[in-house]
Image (cartoon, rainbow, N blue to C red; front, side, top):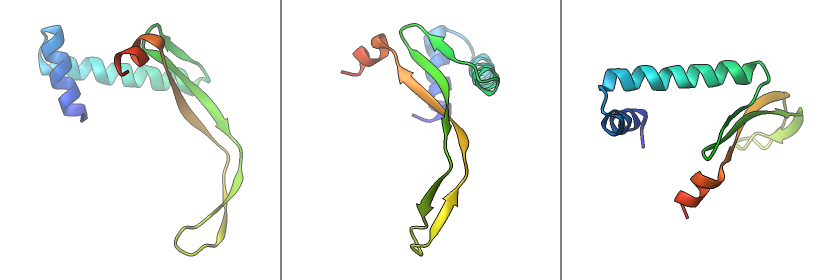
Length: 90
């Protein structure tokens, strides 16, 4: 599903315009990003939890040349699905 398809489905499901659904989705994404940037955690009961994981620096290989490269340490976003969401896809 693309972002446009998600927006259309949200608009139809909530009985609002697509423009309103775009604003709500963009606001949600912005807010989650701001909270995670502050090393926070966002938990939505039944849906899941977004959190930040620290990745250590490590060595890797360039797949084209086979040369060893150094991969920098970074923060990555993790998502753990909640029980209700997991139940809907089984």
